[in-house]
Length: 122
Image 1 (cartoon, rainbow, N blue to C red):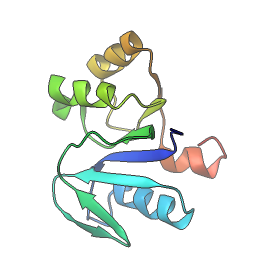
Image 2 (image 1 turned 90 degrees about the horizontal axis):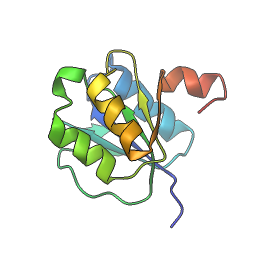
Image 3 (image 1 turned 60 degrees about the vertical axis):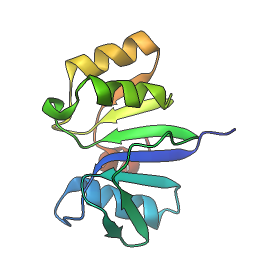
Image 4 (image 1 turned 30 degrees about the vertical axis):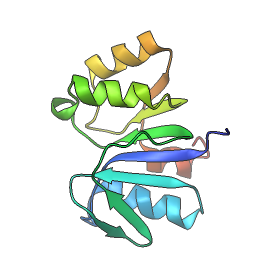
């Protein structure tokens, strides 16, 4: 199975949040994505889900959740999805999560999803 889905963790209905802007960007580019947040709702045609499911074919996880909310359960969830890479957007950097990703052999970068896309590095 080809991995081609981006999972946005920390998705928000608030239009001023960068996770909301990332959802809109991925929509506009026609990229497959799943939005996971605390509140159900829709951003354009994307439904924000609140349940941590065992999603398949996750290529990239882009984090918009502060380190204080990245508990062991979330770290295990992220690793269990076996993404190719994880993007720590500004404010989501976590030593515990990055160390766990290193141990699991999962690539990660401290970057901004929006900037990566705009500079052709996504």
